[in-house]
Length: 321
Image (cartoon, rainbow, N blue to C red; front, side, top):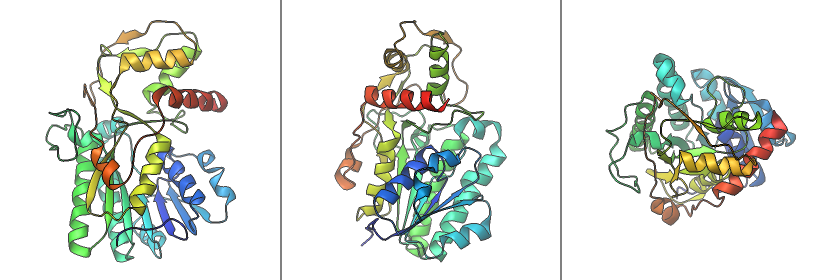
């Protein structure tokens, strides 16, 4: 049995002060986990994201880095579950590929090595739709090849999945990898160098300027709310499933023009978007996930619609800024 119940479990969450990680921590706390250790270096994560969780005795925050081999091994001892979310953004990977290799590849190896040594019952790894690049088929299922990806971030995530398969074969390490599509929601990074497009748009709209779309705006994404992402992590832990990868998405295609309009509607702006030069990093023009496998094997279906999700994001952002 590879199913692990959350109630009474002991978990390590790498990157647990980040957007997704902090929501996973909240889910673990509400699920009755006996111990939740959060490892974060606070490059992207924020202590404020854990304010509610840290009120519980079961949660312990450790400032550190997944590149610290001894620390990772120490924190993994005695854990039932490891949720591995620590990463750097795709744009930073392009600017600092050596750092990206150290964090996304070497750091992930450290986590998996420690999990195998500690006989962790299951690892839930955060992967990405970036492994597909611009897919050949839509909706895109998990059997699609990774050869169209040309980003270092996507290459590292594909290698992460390969390492998981190897550790499962060599050591019997149970795991599920989750390929997130376009994640948004509260606790997005609003202070760092590599902020998300939605954050930049909210700043512009709030100041009376229109959202700036890079490119023609016809490129599409498959948006999924961070609360749904966190719930998928818990479902993956609880499911009697191992050695598998799942798309985690809404299964709904939204163009950047549609997204800009939806955000403008939520923020009560009637300004038409402006357009700028297309991005040079991750120029994928279409994303749409086939979410059938996750629904069948994990019981996952996205619950928050885009309008409701954007309203919650705007409300949070206004309270934070």
